[in-house]
Length: 264
Image 1: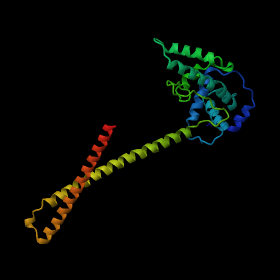
Image 2: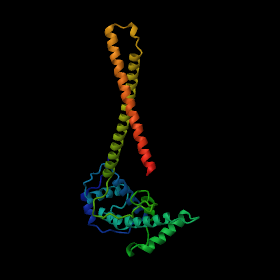
Image 3: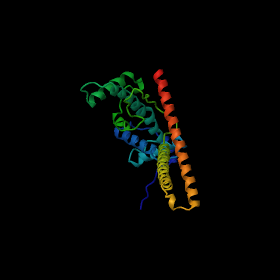
Image 4: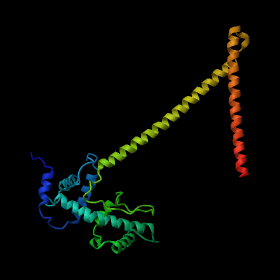
């Protein structure tokens, strides 16, 4: 039984010594883009990994999909960072301008043509010709390369190829943090509802108890019981008078504030 081997960093480093070979074909570009996206979204990747380690993983995925083994991970990185990504970022900015200034009766093909004209008029000589529509059709679904439709959005900026790649772990951390914040917010709301409910129950119970005290038939009570209920009834009446006084003060303050606003 044969065992499939996984490309290692050492193997990739050996491959780096080889020549780049023939030019990339469209299908290779597409597999490279897909390998990059899959690897960058892998939540098992450590956030402190180096750029080389990240691209070895991209290279491994690229090879697993049956592509050229003569391509080393550095060739893939250079292809993506110096050609595919910057070209697609710039074209995305051109498409953003087109989308923010639509023309009547324009279809998708017309928009693409206008975006292409803008791209070729503004791109550097190195990227003068846009050759990566096949890649852009995939990358435009991702936030980094997605065309902006609002003037408030900032233009895209290409990340230095030597920087550590944004990883799935980072994305997973952000998602995990958001879920935790949402859960905490939901708990606070739930607790507030619970406290409000308990307070309402307590107030209802208090009203029922006070109603029973105020409604007691004194003629059937002993002298000691009459003394107890008389005292309780007096406490209830005093509390009600106090609360009524607070309500009146609040109403007077509201009226005074209203009068001041009218005078101003």
